[in-house]
Length: 194
Image 1 (cartoon, helix red, strand yellow):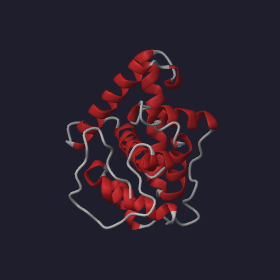
Image 2 (image 1 turned 120 degrees about the vertical axis):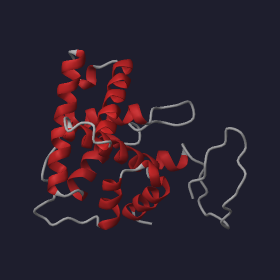
Image 3 (image 1 turned 90 degrees about the vertical axis):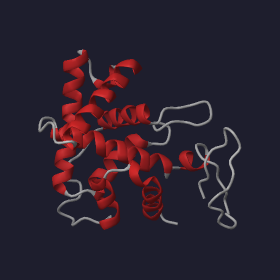
Image 4 (image 1 turned 60 degrees about the vertical axis):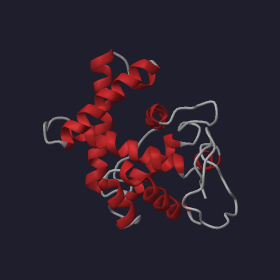
């Protein structure tokens, strides 16, 4: 199975956990016209911020490594540059800048230097901004809300289609047998990743 097909399958399985705009991009097409690819670019420092952001969403636990270990710092900007139309890339890039500005405004520090507690607080604020946008209660911070929703979606897609996500966070069967839609799980057992 190719990586793109795996991403589509993971998106389908995550269903309601992923926004309609991300589902649209994934199921409409993975190919962009050449003039829209790489419309924005990100530095290695930006990739570190993406990795830290994703690690708040999927942190390392006793049983599996988190989003940072799964390589989401590179995955998120790669997906954005290669799969999203130029208008979405521009909004995402502006939201990324707004994230860093909000970090400086609220905490007086860059995002990568925030404590885990500060990152969690910022994530809660971003979620509230995104929900206010969705409910039509606010027209402010539109790009920041878009960034949060899309980065969250790409974190989930990237993590659960990565080797770590498929083999460590979920039960893995190399060659699956018959389909059993009602397979019992033992207490504490991970879901299946076939």
